[in-house]
Image 1 (tube, rainbow over the protein chains, first blue to last red):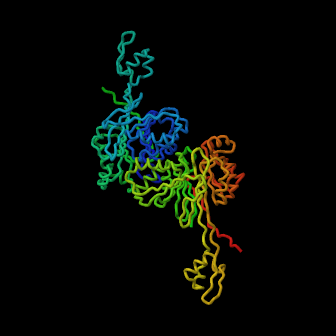
Image 2 (cartoon, rainbow over the protein chains, first blue to last red):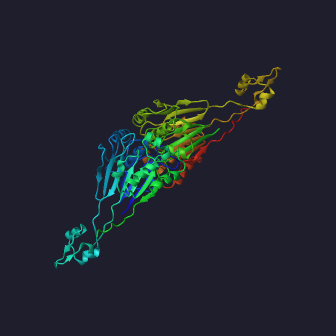
Length: 312
Length: 312
């Protein structure tokens, strides 16, 4: 029942000898969602021992090279590995042209279908759901169209205790009703209160990804109460002018967004290579939002399962 | 006065957690020639501490992704780093389309000129020269047009001894003549033999790159007497059928080419990921050509300076 982010690449536009360009994988109960795909993503996936075959959805924030130059290599390797399952790619409509160029020039014998989901609306929108997960896209504010993504587990039903099923000899229909919070009446006409048969469900967990973007106030409402917020923080506050000019965020601003959103934790990365001491960036963010962490290549960030409090 | 190859990536089409896709850099007396540019080349260049600004020439063997998917990232980083110097890219004419797609979609503000040198002739041909280096291209035999490259130092003049210049009070014109092997006549009419003023020059050093290719007999003549031959060896001889099918070479065949070419050393790589023990591939090659080495990511292979023997 994992809800775990793996940072594959945490550099800004210029990779270094220890930091790959941007890519992250979110594992939601063994569904693996790839978010951005900077150069070398497939090599980092190998190092992180994430099976290629489990990646069926790729979410692209925007079409700057440091967020997508790993796509061609990954698509090629999927093919070489005999992939048959369709692959969904979500992103700005321009992604279609990039995929088509790949297909025409590098993959005449592709064995799997690539489904492109073009994001056109500049609003908060549900773009994917399965049994346990919902994914929303929302606009960011960068030099070219750019989207953030919110991944959220769907609300869970109540947990029914095994011994209750046996004790009251429940039918399938009754079990469903109990999970939905109802009381039941036994064959003997006795009323059994729901609370005596159930435990509160686990909280739904959530992760939001915001890169690249200038500080954009609306983001705090899009990602309200998120458990883990990744927000780019390319510059220190003293270089705010550069942040304005390039439509990036300062560490202080990222922390302000996390604070306004009442996020559980803030993960910052995409630091300009001008900063040799990452501790400076962390310190600045922590002054405003103490629960801040630094994104590091191949590091994992888990959100534990916690039971909801029972409404009394 | 280095002549040194650095292997940046040595994998075949599928990179692993320890092997990047194909790329190599040859340092000829501080001129850095990049040969192929697989995904992650710029990251490996960083790790190898090779300055980006010193790379002015990129030689592409063929247009399969594992040999070129690092190009877009590298071109972008050149731009971000403020490159002004023109960059020459050599390869099959199809490379033009790939560069144009990059320029149109990812680099609207490129600060430097990209000069594309399209190889069209399927013959041994001089494609570049400077004061100390000559580079030749020659055809290989793969599923799509593919070129090998031979890098060779230009023949050196004789080394004149400093004390000879002082002793005989030589003019610039005389020094040139002596370096070219002539004797001189002093002001007093005395003949001074060339041998008493000079030492034999260093041997010219050479490196050849052959990947990807089926065994192609002509290669041995193209690279005759090369000091270091990199030749792909994707398969063991027992998997010769696969080599035929995919137009790759076996270790035995690579060793035969090295032997026919009277190469100094053979470097093999591009191994299929099916082989878990690289020692097997090395063993098979060494049986035919003992001076065989394995290409390893970030390893350097130097060719030392050796004086030519004096013709008596």
